[in-house]
Image (cartoon, rainbow over all chains, first blue to last red):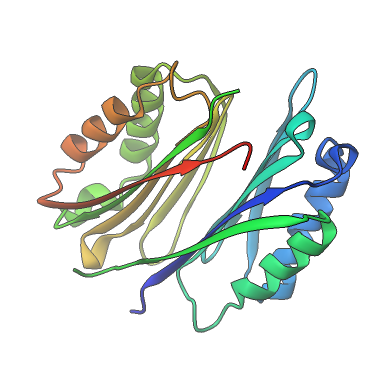
Length: 116
Length: 116
């Protein structure tokens, strides 16, 4: 049983209109999951008023999420995969950074140990 | 606009039967969210075969999630709240630790900055 890998991305200076486009973000996350080799089991989300989007993707290998703040041009992305050898989360992360046209990214990788 | 607070919990030595009880975990997460003062907008999940559960809760203030590995007596919990002043995520975390009877917990708190 391999440990989980949790990629935490804070994306800055993204065009605000992309961050408020639910359909765009949902398709982006679906494609990112597919590119990583993970299996999408369910996807749900919410469009906030006056702005902002949350999308949560339930994966066979844990989850992926995005929360956006269009006015601040900021998006928070999590890619948590519990089968890191079989899933290329970095590929998904690169795709998301590209699609959101982020000018600056803070990235953190956390190992989540299944056994202490 | 205050920054997000992301609590990452790895819970060890939890009784395996609790970690495979979908209804128990769903109710636990719903109650934890309510206790924290956050607003639950949607909840979804999956029961894996032969074992293991994932539950994702979409909040007005971001998300909460749990993934379990009953055989390893391990659960991975995330509590990410974007309105940390109005939400007491620590209260939710304490409740979850108690309900899962975790003997050991690794806890990490990450500030997710809306602006760099």
